[in-house]
Length: 122
Image (cartoon, rainbow, N blue to C red; front, side, top):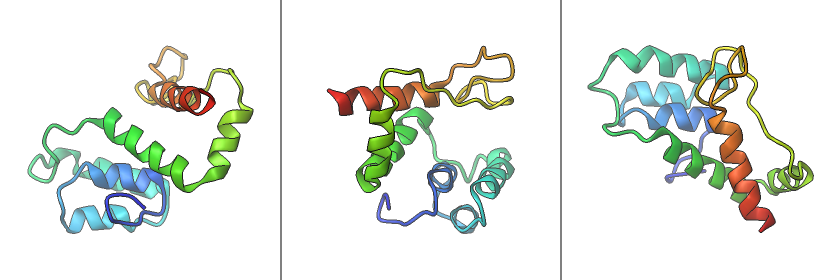
């Protein structure tokens, strides 16, 4: 639950949040899986008239992760259990959110989880 709406997963919410309210946005929100939500989101990249202007993907993802933490206490426990270990999104083709195939990616998702973990641990 975020922005007064219920989404099946963070991926659904993230992909839908990139689009203005529309039928296409609802298709993403109601996709059958996180991968399908991502795939739907990719289809609409070429339609600038549907996109939210000045979309700040890192700000949105942090807001989504904070909502996830607030609504799922098990996530807090998992973050605590991870101690001070580096968290990484290992995904071959994602060089922004993940590590990429050659581990040269920015790993922004892992860094965001580590930032939130540091706040939880104080």
